[in-house]
Image 1: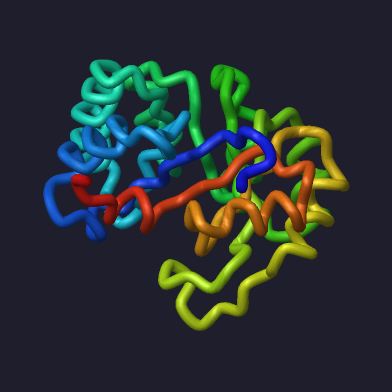
Image 2 (image 1 turned 135 degrees about the vertical axis):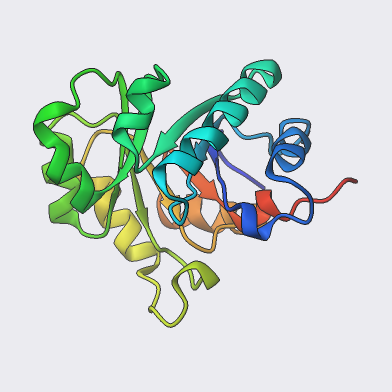
Length: 196
């Protein structure tokens, strides 16, 4: 049984969807038990112009569904579309570090305690830490595990969201192993969610 209420983040990957990404987002927004609190539009394989066209559609859909959506990777696209939130990989965030003050909601992916502390010192809103469990998204790369997650959570005060191989069934294990965890990110679960 889940011991606390966690922020649930849906991370997109249109290649995992049986139908269109838009249809899948509508489906997960209607999910009763695990409805996401936030959607990160993470389609890193798209060139920026195609990502921007997709982002326009997804942002409009999310507004209709009352689901908060932030963008990923493309800082200038987020600015053009007047999105107040963006999520960046650590290296890309470092590159843009001095020019992100116009975003009120800023997430960064971290893979070490040092990165987590550095990101916190520079004003991020939240961190994603991973990957925690084995995942097809990082095929062949060994997972960092719950001890790593706990270490990160205990080293910062900003919210930390676990990512990598997360399923609803693993949430109690995550909470037990890392009581201070603030949320979880799920890609496969949300992108493959079918109509019940």
